[in-house]
Length: 478
Image (cartoon, rainbow, N blue to C red; front, top):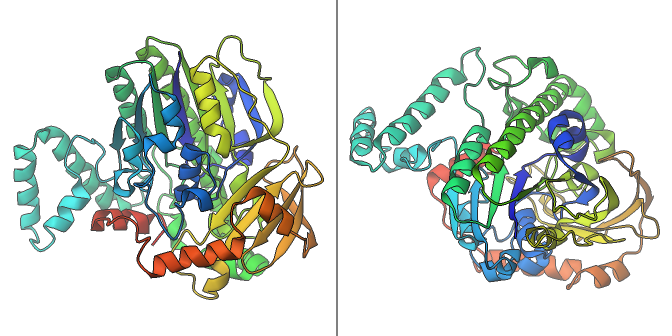
């Protein structure tokens, strides 16, 4: 049996990956060129990757942001009984705070507030002592000295304070958004774990807010050291379309360049991470590199939308998938062109772990979004919080039919040689047969039921502390 490492590059779309991640592509023996995410943001997408089910089937989405009801037995991990299952994640949703860790034998959360996971979580400590003023620093020092890992706790505090001190200065951001920590902790986890093993990792560095970080390639973007993607209003683009883009075109172009630079940085970090894991393991290890979803970047093909909210565009759905070091007798071609859905990711991982390369391609695949991923929109909440579904390969391999809970529907033309591109070619497309064939419950009925569950408090989700809420706000979710 083989070790398998699943590397999730959060928020990385296929076209930018193709341009800015040449090292990983060179290392990979196989690329699934038509990989699609099952949903378009972290919560439902991660649940779908693990369970092989759509959001309306596993029930984890905007109206219920809680993984704790999903046990290992509900995931592909149940089909790896001999593997030690572990994870290291920088994604605040794919963490113990939302019950994601319960699926694994062992799990490690990392964040800017705790760059050494064994040490004190600085953000949580701050809220627990927020009435102390300057005395808080003395309390923190005492807590560090009493902690099982005093030096790592002090290092966590120093990193947070240094990041704050430099934030307003015209210098590069000193510390990345977790890539270095994930790589370090991932290798440590592998070194200390029994084999065979399955390791899940989530790298968050391409997720907004973006700014220039020490280590980014300056030739790839024109952002100043003080520029941040959090400083301009994405709703101007989402609400005003092309006119909003024209008003913000300088910031949008800077954002796109910095997004590419972040992917280039991940390309370098993750390639080294793969080398380090291979050196730390005794058994053969296969790596699967993909993304939970992509990112809308204000292009015409995605209706000038920005971010990853209220959309099933190709900028969000078309993501990379590479296999590094597959089994020796792999039957995959270097470039596979059939549709692959994250709904079959577990089948792929289990097959690879068992020295197999299963046929995981389909002529037609579905995807789904239930509700919004971010804070309340400034207007028209019914539209921005609607439910969306789509099916690929309807009547034509290069076609997609999409519909929503408000009754609107469209047919899109795709081009398999143009990643993340689509063009609306027809409106008012019949979708009832597709809705019944690929989904267990009619779209408006499920949307009403999900909203009712949230309103009644039956799907409240986990209680999260104030430090976690701060992190969600930084990422644009609150």
